[in-house]
Amino acid sequence: MTIMTVAFLFGLVVGLAAVASNPSPYFAALGLVMAAGMGCGILVVSGGPFLSLVLVLIYLGGMLVVFAYSAALAAEPYPESWESRPVLETLLLYLGGVFLAGLLFWGQWNWGFWFVEGEQDEMGMVGGDVGGVALLYSTGGAVLIISGWVLLLTLFVVLELTRGLDRGALRAV
Image 1 (cartoon, rainbow, N blue to C red):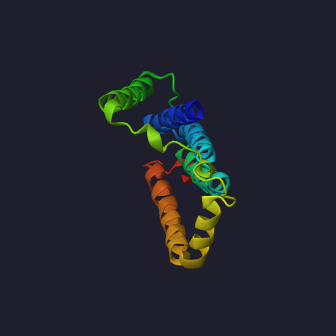
Image 2: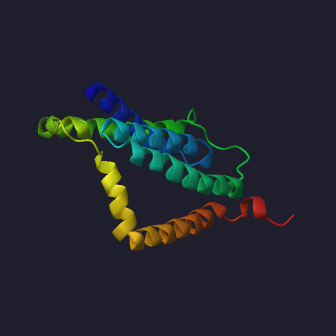
Image 3: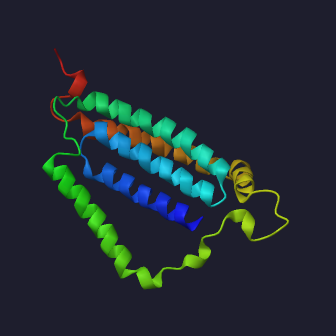
């Protein structure tokens, strides 16, 4: 189980580095899908399958719409791919920084917290994520409303940043 968790964490770091290193929204969306998929794998291994399902449906469903809008407005004729030199250098720089940070904190790493949620007690029948979802909907209604407004604001910020000087696909013909 620990090997699967390490593999998912490694895939998550590579996906996040792919998103951060590529300036083109076309190729960064693939890194976003990889990072979200690996994050869902980490949640499933940790004992939260329902939370993983919610992450897939909401995050990939909602945030990929933002990437589709920003890709449509960016409209670059020749976007930079992962093989281009600046993107590859930045990707390797991020991965090297994560590797050095891992080496720096290796002795302080606590391996004892990696257990599946149902393994600590024998009689546990209900997963912890079910109780968390019920609590979120009962007392966390304000958090859901604020989160929706933050996502809407994020959509407008991303659209404004990717518009640029030439107005992308909305320029006057």
